[in-house]
Image 1 (cartoon, rainbow, N blue to C red):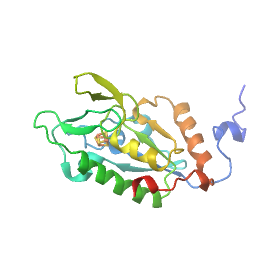
Image 2: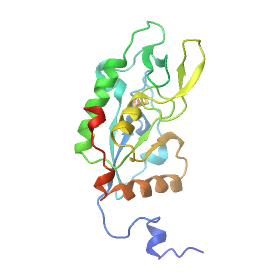
Image 3: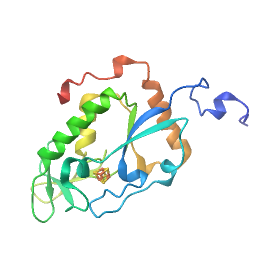
Length: 197
Ligand code: SF4
């Protein structure tokens, strides 16, 4: 039976010493920002509650912040799953370069802000981490990765990334935080930045 007065219980395995909150990048729609293509959001109430002592969220939205605005035409990834293009569904505009450039800029900036991890919206062609559909030339959906996490992992492969809308209980969030806290103070895992410069 866990002892509620025990430090290790109260801090979920994190250090009981006072520490600055972890700075975590997050897809803005997960915190309730209305930045999705249809003007909606994907609020995860668990993340939106106060984590003030433990997390400082740094929200971002590649698609709206790169100048595409909200609302906007929906997009999908197409072509080679390793190097997909990001195109609008109906007008067939290729936004790959625009979104790529913004993501590179954001990741460089976030590197100086010393982020310890990212919580990302699943299945988004820009933010999704795993299983994002990429429509092949033969019209088959293949599993891929969104533009932002692809660039983050090229820059800092050891950084903890998770799909924030799939974290459904506090223990899952604490598990992510333990991984992120583990990276702190280990500059050898902080990445070189070479891949995105
Ligand atoms: S998934 Fe990413 S690109 Fe899409 S609305 Fe959310 S933050 Fe913006």
